[in-house]
Structures are given as C-alpha cells and as structure tokens.
Image (cartoon, rainbow, N blue to C red):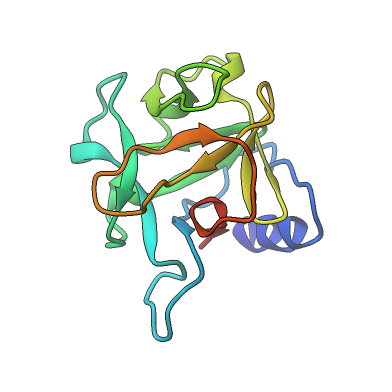
Length: 153
C-alpha cells in the first residue's frame, strides 16, 4: 500500500517519502525495454551486498536480491534491510554515492521529482552514468537523461 502511495505521489511531481519505512522497492533507471522484468534497464545495487559503511552503490543488472531493495523514510533512502542509508560523498558534481549509517546528514537527504532522485542539499540528481555493470552512482546536474530517470518498483 505505501509503495503504491509513493508511486502515485511521485507521478504528481515533487514527493517526499512516507514518514514510516515503506515496503522495500527497487530503484530502476532508464526507460524499460519491452519485456523488461523490473522496469528500467538497470538497477541501483549495493556492491557485493555488503553492509560495511562506505560500500559503493552502483548500476547493475536487475535481479531483485536484498542489495537492490531500498526503503523510503522521510527524506532518507534506506538500504540493506534498513541498516544503512544512501549518502552522497559531497555536494558537488561527481560526488559518489555509498551506504553509511543513517544520521540525516546533508548527503542523506533526498526527494523524488518528476522521475528524478534529487539530493536536497545540493539540488543535484542521482545519476547512473553509462549504466553498465559497476558504474558508480554519482551526483550530476539534473538533465533529461535516461541515467537520471528513476522508477520506484
């Protein structure tokens, strides 16, 4: 139910996330090819399914395992069964995204706006770059690019 609410709110424009953790969802990027199983042509993925702070979040083929499941709580995006949060390493273009202990720091504040996941502090967009396996997710200037078009599935 909450995941549906997030999708509905997101389709209407700028959306925060539910105040209580929602069901886990996958973050897929790009416009799906016909018959794509999970929506986009790639997924956000916590490297190696590690819970170690500082583990990179990168583009990977969608498989739906736990390291591709994210929950939305307030302005944070939680990963690895709510044990970590997505955090940008800085507020400038090119800052990488990794998982860290959740602490509501500037790098952990996000919102969903018209298909884009935007860091609230920098106003930069989450970007999957070339989208190939192992491409680090980074912050980039928001643009009409497939690598910045996210679906919450």
